[in-house]
Length: 164
Ligand SMILES: Nc1c(C(=O)O)ncn1[C@@H]1O[C@H](COP(=O)(O)O)[C@@H](O)[C@H]1O
Image 1 (spheres, rainbow, N blue to C red):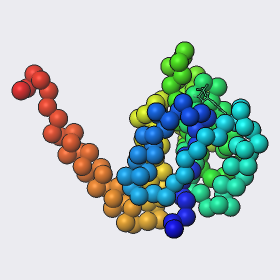
Image 2 (cartoon, rainbow, N blue to C red):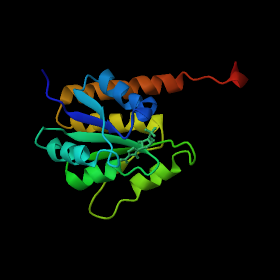
Image 3 (cartoon, protein in one colour):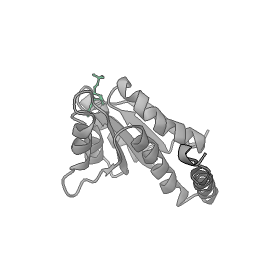
């Protein structure tokens, strides 16, 4: 069995609607991943353990999604040097601006790569993880390039009602 390369964590199962878009990309590229709920607020000891074990377990990156007071990505980053890719999940009252600011405004010295709010951010975090892995995996880079080529073709094929 292939060793797990990417960890996907989220603060609540209610984040799945967003974070499933990261998982779908990892599946599409055949990346060995794990996905689970880990909350800095509700299960701090588990969160610390997850972060501390990330490097010894060989994880290459952690995609962490959370909403509201979204401390999960930053707190994981505080406990590991494995790259953390943060996904702000849209919150009910502030539409995810709170999540974005919580994740992006890290103090100097503890970086979290922060993506857009919502499902596009989740998908892009996964694509970024694929790009990181592709640095060491030429076959994966070829698949990533093919993905981009298909995307370009789809964009070129777009039509507008005014031109129909
Ligand atoms: N931001 C965090 C953390 C954390 O950062 O540790 N743990 C849960 N949450 C967030 O709380 C929101 C509401 O969670 P519930 O739907 O379970 O009440 C979710 O978006 C989750 O990411």
